Image (spheres, rainbow, N blue to C red):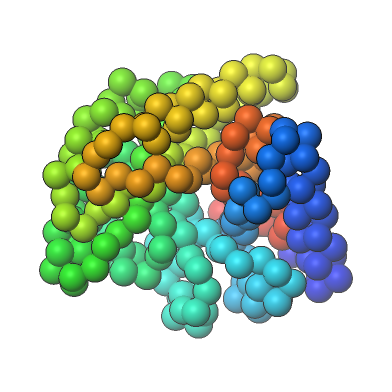
Length: 233
């Protein structure tokens, strides 16, 4: 885990790199939000990161998220990991955005929980842009079905899309995936559905966030470049 000074420098460096990527793409820096991916990061480090200007935090695992939320409920939390339907009850009312919706069953469970609590839940549809069996997300062909499902809900609101592209050494191949996501994002922004307000394109992590921004990301999820290498679990 990084020390205090390194953490501060890392956050400043990532923010500067986001700004430079935006300038290269002819975009305004405030068009891109930075999320700190806090898997394996302790509460004290998260507090410091918040003091150093990080405003959005994302967790991958429900069991790791809950104790952190208990200590830091005032932060803006997103859920960015694989979403198990039976774990939705623990997070739906604690996070401001779920990045990883990819099934009708998840939507049904979210609608049921939110209706009972009288609250709305903002979600992203995760798209498996590379068609990799090891990753979550839906195929492009199934996006319409999930959007139609959400449009028939009363409490689930679609805010956009998320993806984790295949790992590529070839930057141009990586750009193809991000450009395809941008096309999908723009397509659905133009369509008129109930409970659909497309404004978030969550793509780009520590190894590729600058390319993702150049190709249209509105939110990047950064872990290692901010918090350093975390222990493998």
